[in-house]
Image (tube, rainbow, N blue to C red; front, side, top):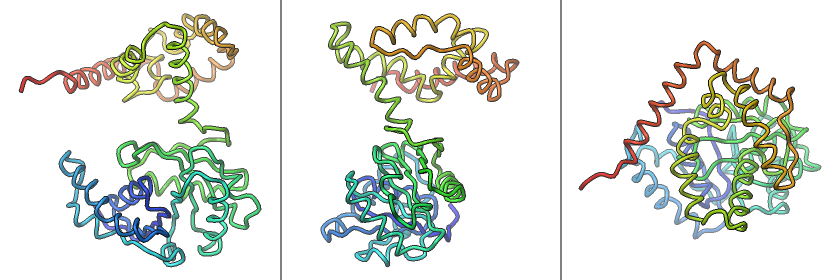
Length: 314
């Protein structure tokens, strides 16, 4: 892994902060972690090494844990931690007042081009940055947990966030091995939790209605939907499930899904215009003449997963 010269600062040494430090240090960046509590500062190095050793045992490190850990420094001073950083990753408690105060301090302590990224899963950047001169450098960078194993990260700018701020964030996260997705506008739950919430709402409703048990629902997700969704999303799944692609799937299944939604008091039909837009985007990603090859690829991935999940006689 080549050494990087661009410094990353992580504010908050809890589990997400340590995880982000690992992401960037593993990618070769010098990283400084700030935490105001001395007990946390003392605990971080051992936690960091333990995670690295676990990754090493799984064959997920290109360098030794000691080499990666040497890139991480622990700081008791916020200004010292963020000095010369190109990106500051905020990982403090999910409280608006705490984040607003912190971003006010970060705006004063960093240069005009430093990206200020919040790990928030619910508080939009427009609230954290309200009234701040540095609002144009602040955005949400919401990770999966833990980010060193779930690479997706949602970049959610506020209306005030500069385009070059988003571009720099995208470059840095992608360069660290993550999968950045830019969310076009602020919406509660962003994308990750809106999708997760839709599944959880239906799961709770199915238990409430006596349709299935908790374990049955987890089994359907674990051994069915989740196995496919581990390497392709719902649109690609639907596209490959029906000959003729996603437009054919929508024609066949759209009415049933509309009835299911109506049963839950939700009216979001797949209109012809919406289906056409989804079809256009899918065909841009996968031209129709490549459909058969992609179906074969899907089956190969499922075979590999089936082999991994097969019980081993020890």
